[in-house]
Length: 418
Image (cartoon, rainbow, N blue to C red; front, side, top):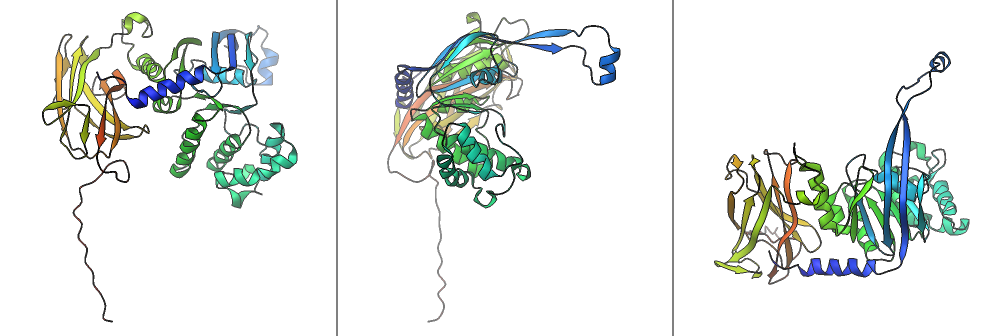
């Protein structure tokens, strides 16, 4: 593999710089247990006529959870459904009280955990924005002064005096998101809200997250989107069965999360155990060729060939291999899969050599190559995910967009009589 890219180095340095700052969130030994009724009583008659004591089962949502988050960090929390992510976020927001442990938080907090929480459906958008600002510690005049910015970002100026009970779900989430980002809170708690609204509003949200990432505000993001974790987060944490299983670089945590979801085959041990670090398929080498030579940079339009050597460590049925090219902004520019030329089964010890000629339509810049390997011809059945197997630079004349296109343009002019 090639050495880390400038982009990866810069992100790693940024994460290091952030982690050197003061701790603003300190969690130590957090436990949270729920009592879930086994026999559900649905009516008053059942309550009166049922004499046996209710039976409950214990759900340990969080067990001895400890971590630190530093000022200015964009910190991701990932895990499978039921791992305790949302419960932890609610403990941090003081919605739930922890059964044991402590949380220390230095800074004003703005939670964005559930759609419309903190809003009064019987009040108008104007009244809700003012009320929310006052609850955040602002004077009423100051809260009122922010109304214009909130409504402009949410694109709801025409509906300022409409009661929220008449808002659509899309309008409500835009308003809630806008209120959150327009607040003075130093700490933001965000639960699965990266894909709110329509496409144009999602782009506005992405722009805001880019700005926040480079600011002194601290963000905790709970998400299942590993692309968002790698793109925005300085560090990330993996929760599993209510416990912290790993904290570290976003790419490493994303890999562990995906292994946890897709690689626990029958008879295999815990996929987070160090002995299971060996994937079913490993990458021995990946490189770019141009003119028959290995290169790390090439001119725009020059021939480009992606080459890779992979090795199967275990049998893999129905293998698929895919590559994606990502630019320095984290945008997936292009990708391709290789299902048709592979055997029906890879046997342990088999080695693959892949050579793919690619039309070089990349604009000048640095690009990172990601690699996936799936089994059973199923994209969800992942056996290998590597978010950074190679990087290279394209140089030459600049252009607009993310790729350039071959052009064959004809223009005709039909002038009328003067």
